[in-house]
Length: 213
Image (cartoon, rainbow, N blue to C red; front, side):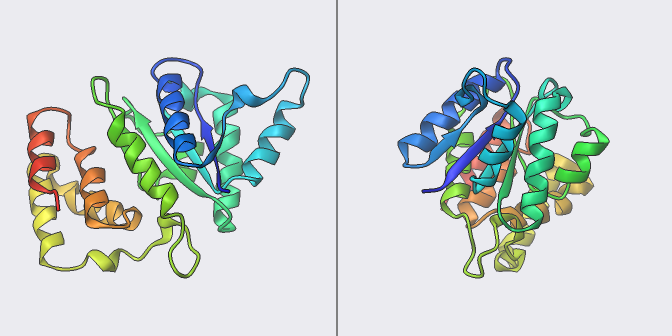
């Protein structure tokens, strides 16, 4: 059975989302490791290393607090090495975080498609997107979803989506859509990922309502 490792800071809303993700994944049959499972007296650094090597995914909850956490940075650093060896996929989630990542983290994560949660948003879409990614862990050649070929979305519909996203994001829309296409495994998931790039409100709701298959 696949194990998913959740890396997060012990503050709200980080720990609230971590708890929701844990419940969603365990309900759907996945093992989940969070640091509260480390028992009193155990070597923390050793347990983190062991548990990451036993996991197929690392969910990195990135917030203004967590990107300053030595623990979170260490977990992501180890996960990055495992991802380079195709042993683990990293799934970044930005929590009210619009700023650039610190240099060390940006070197690990900037090329990986992320999703965004903002205060006031429902947690359900985040849980659904993560569950979809974990369920679709590998392509036929065994590569993690971060490595999937974006050409499967090629065509007039993708170009139309880029034009629509440009109304909300401007010139960076093409980059955002291409980056999302590297992560998504189907059109619906692509639309979900792009919706999170649009600030919460009527514009996002309209986009989500328009792009449902």
